[in-house]
Image (cartoon, rainbow, N blue to C red):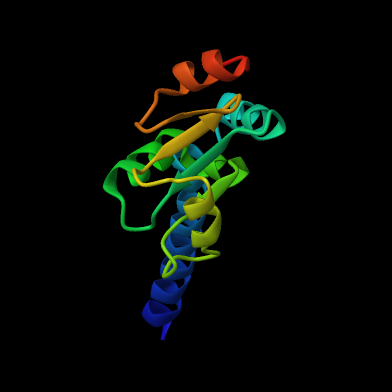
Length: 125
């Protein structure tokens, strides 16, 4: 009986340690970068838009550059099958290549570095 109680106690301690470490690792690996969040918010405040499609590999690369801060970007999904799709906006804006950035009224169809986006829009990064 003692062996079972000791084993249960050890397993409980191990489980607590594992859970604690996973939360610690999660905050290390998935923490938002404040500079990226600030840049994304600045881009949105300045009316910058990114047009893309859910299946677009280049769009995925661009989103990855921002990490979790991408949720702050004014993103327009052009494929009608995508989440929150706005294909009519993309047609009206004549968007045919993804990703397309619209900054200060100018459109550019390419993956851009965060520094380039910041410089073009007048944001700090």
